[in-house]
Image (tube, rainbow, N blue to C red; front, side, top):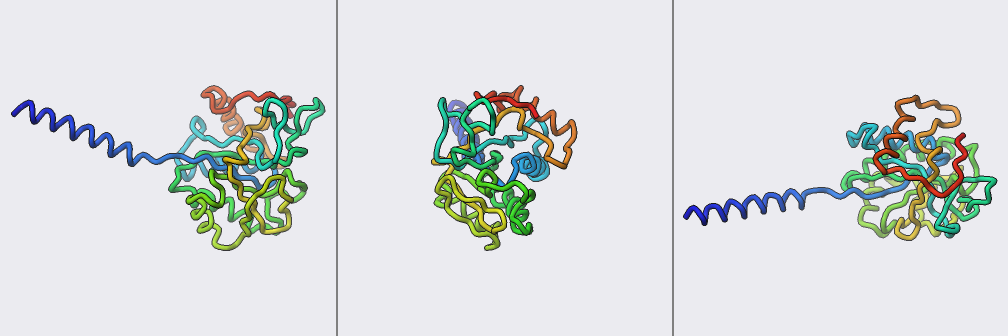
Length: 232
């Protein structure tokens, strides 16, 4: 009898563990673009902290490039430079910020991004930046065909025109357009280290924010890339 009870206890423990594993929610990598990525990263980091309860040692937002039809040698996608490294703009990419979000919270997380685009006369924070490198973009696995896209549609509430991104798409400044990319086809390419956790052109974000770059690098979420590090 004791043997039978012990066996039943093992089954209960295993089942409970399996139940917890089944309830564990996956994060999904999503990228957002809306003008200069310096400003967008700061906004995304604030949302990670306030909404997801993360801190400087666990935020996931990184700046980079996406939405282009080409990549350079060795798979490189680099910022404008004079070293002849593959330029993101000439390959059709736009500036974006990639972040990991629990799947069930995607819509609510994206709402601030959509609100910003909807309320702005020009569709973004910094309309002085013009060109396809600054177009508004959202990228997620499966794009508009993903079941998760319904959350973004709901958060949008019909305010913005969500369009299927085909790569190297036109600028969205002065419109209410947002290109939606399938990140399986148009993946995120991490940007240079010097661009990460950077002040915006006018706004200064402080040392606490800047130090998040060192934290991300030390834990391996931020990596060196084979592009020129200009350091401005």
